[in-house]
Length: 309
Ligand code: DON
Image (cartoon, rainbow, N blue to C red):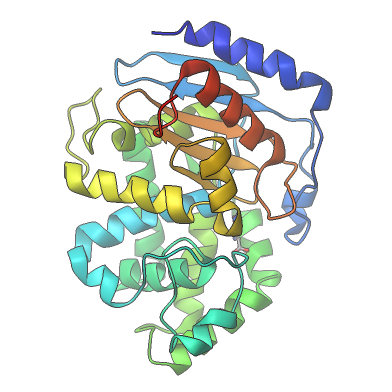
């Protein structure tokens, strides 16, 4: 077992001269105002140890990382029927792209691009008011992180709606194909709110621990999902979790991971650790620049790539 605290501390120190690199997402105004020099790295092991460096206790907007949690909820509710309405293939397109939707009759390529996550939000909403469904997602994330302090940043949720033209376009387009069962306003209300969940790197790493431990929370003993489902969630994170940067992330890091435009990434080293990193500056395809580099260093130095070596 590597000395994880020494590893985490050394990665923080190695990257410190470059804190602030990349471009902060500016299409949602509250995200544009985040200090680009923030950096956090947190590693939680199935034994319950946490190793952290930097701003690991500062909440940030988890954005698209929340799509892992809503997909987990939808699978719990609908099982394999989820896949009737959304695919499991990488898109090779940006997260907010509309181009494939017309060719593929409004069925999104995968649950992590925006169109797919909007369909998943429609599934989570079924039988609920938007307010109830938002509460259900938040309760689930709090349960996974064993932390009731996690909250939704309402200012971010409002800004997402105010700047959400492309998401409205995607949702209306899919509604036009009969792919959504609920009104667009309700579905996007849920989508904008789950993207606006704020968590610290420590909380996020803790929430992802079930994915590193075969679907069971090893610290509480709770069975979150079956082992086969955890394996498949990890497979989707590996192949689709970084949009058209997913191949590059697999090549360089070699771990399932899900990014968000807030600069966070949740990564899973199966059997070994759940990892959260936060650095707001993004690369050209909208994934955290230094966050990806931190994970590349961690996977290489700890020998954690799922591809060996
Ligand atoms: O849909 C949006 O624009 C955002 N709320 C979420 C986007 C996001 O995080 C994409 N990920 N890298």
